[in-house]
Every structure is written in C-alpha cells, then in structure tokens.
Amino acid sequence: MTKQNFLEDCLNTYGTSADYPFDEDFETAVLRHVDNRKWYAIVMRVSRRKFGFESDEIIDVVNLKLPIEMFGAFGAGEGVYPAYHMNKLHWISVLLPDAPEDVVSFLTNSSFEVTKSKTKQRKTK
Image (cartoon, rainbow, N blue to C red; front, top):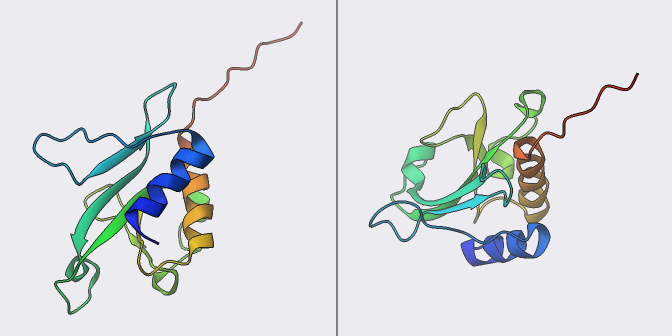
C-alpha cells in the first residue's frame, strides 16, 4: 500500500484528511478525529534500518495506537513492528509496502476506535 492509498482510504472511511503539523516537515502526515483532535495515525518516511533491516531504503510507515489486549497479535510477517519514535506500550509501526491491505485496514480501524471520544453514559434513576 502506498501513502497516497492509505490517506485516501482514511478520507473515504473516516472522513479525515491529513494535516502536516510539523514546521518544515511536509512529508509527515497526521490523521486526527474531527471532534477531539486526537491522533489515530501518523505517516512518516523512515529507513528500513530502524526496523532491523540491513537496508537504508526509506519507506512510508504508519504508526497506529492499539488497545493493550491486541499487542503481540501481529508481527513482522504482517509488516507490524514496535512503534518507531513513539510509546511502544501503546503504538505500533506498520510498514506500508510490506503489510497486507486487510491488516492495514483492520489495525487502522482499531486505532480509530481506541482514540475516539468516549461517550458518557448518564445515570438513570
């Protein structure tokens, strides 16, 4: 999957467009919820070497937040690694050129769900 495909999928599925919040960095894209502005994804260009490969190839990587119970369910075979440059207890990195599209979609949806606004339930008497 390419970065452009990923961003188009997020727009079509969640109605969110990427923003570029970092000064003088026009490649790193952040995807946020419309209501609470929380990130559910960040797309960066990263060297494969950061994930243990013997290659300096720069690829598109998306970091996604997952619920604790999902950690360990995916691995390098699916293009999923501990998060690059973020809290490894809550975030993963998905190598877009390596991960199957269904895995990317599933993990993106999980990240979207875990970061959305919590609805408060009213007490009924």
